[in-house]
Figure 1: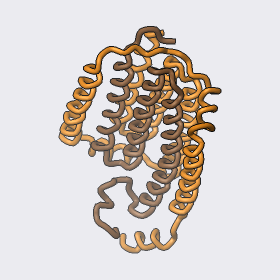
Figure 2: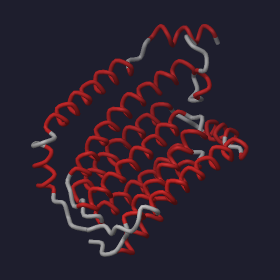
Figure 3: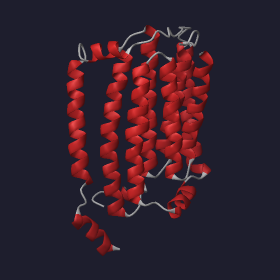
Figure 4: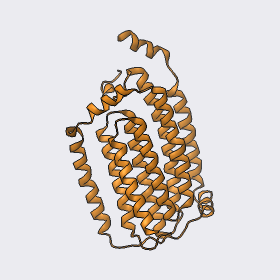
Length: 103
Length: 173
């Protein structure tokens, strides 16, 4: 187990990972990459919870991570089904292809 | 053991950086698996072995396999990589990256300014997590099961191949 890692370093790592995921969502136009970036952001949020739980030696952080995990699994199942429908409909994964409604 | 934390943190940041800059979806996916592995190692060092196992089994296992299946079914070729390369020009990513760097540096400044607080490193065993999960958080477990059921039904409903919409697109093109 760790001896002297400050909690800020763990939280800073979570923040950096979340920022990278945010950049991914903003920059990429491919729906698959955007979904992957959302996964990165959810994972970073879970990391922050576990770090905080480890700071006080409580179970609550890990339980919140399990709930985030459940949410991520449901989100990715629906998101990938939507991506497949999107691809069948528009023959591309470019998110800009759906910028008009009732496309 | 402190060194393990910093090394796996560096690996996690590097592999995540590679995920958002790759042109090929499969390469990005493999880097994402490496990132999840390093985060699982961090969980293990932080004294959360149960969550580390879940990270590998559910994130690096189940969710990544879903992505792999979808990439297989979409049948993306070299043309998609060329398209990604054309989309990822510096003038596209420069602005959002600078804004996010500003936000992250502000976040780090606020977190570091809160004063030193060492992590205890005391292990929280799977038994404790299970006791809390089916004790005070029982309602949350039930809600999570509802969410998973809704996700299952929703994914099945959306994922069905609707014939008429495909034909309509073919007629238009």
